[in-house]
Image (cartoon, rainbow, N blue to C red; front, top):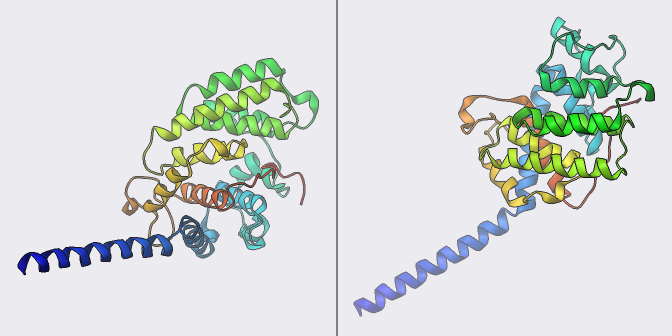
Length: 274
């Protein structure tokens, strides 16, 4: 009798665990996880966007255009304050990305070494400004092999040179470069286990270059475990370390990208006009 009761209890417990597992999978499907993560980030952005840096508002504007988000997330709706000196400096350099003409655009006199290639791309105004193709491809390839932000910003520069028509996405040499840099980005991403700013930048720039298919969607879901209660991400392996706005917006990019995993997005990052 005692053995029967023990077996009966064990069977009930096993059935309970099984039913709980099924319930959990039903309640938290991959799509629902993505939607919940997206909604929490957007809620955070709505509450705090008035305090974002210009650079973050420019990224938000691109996401608004790329994924057809509400117009309230566009730069013209979010940047409504009188520009601070820091705002002016950022708009001089990156105002072209949102076609902001109230402040003249000009290259900074100083920048990180890995920034110059993307600035060269951003400030192209005519075909005469484009570098020699073979030289440019070699520069982008060499910089991408340095790892870290040098790799991610090589991807950004490549994308901008394509947008500025200095390089053609149909060119076999350019396609090879896109593939090579995408692989280097993935190496960077795989070297970090938590959603650091560098890791998420690498993942999103893979998407920007049109190579989303090389990513493992299950690895993306693991990153959502680091989301703070307020919807933001810290950019470290501890959610209590504070908030990194740039990382948070990049995580929004990933959620939107994988909510429509089969979709191909071609919205240019450099805005020519509104």
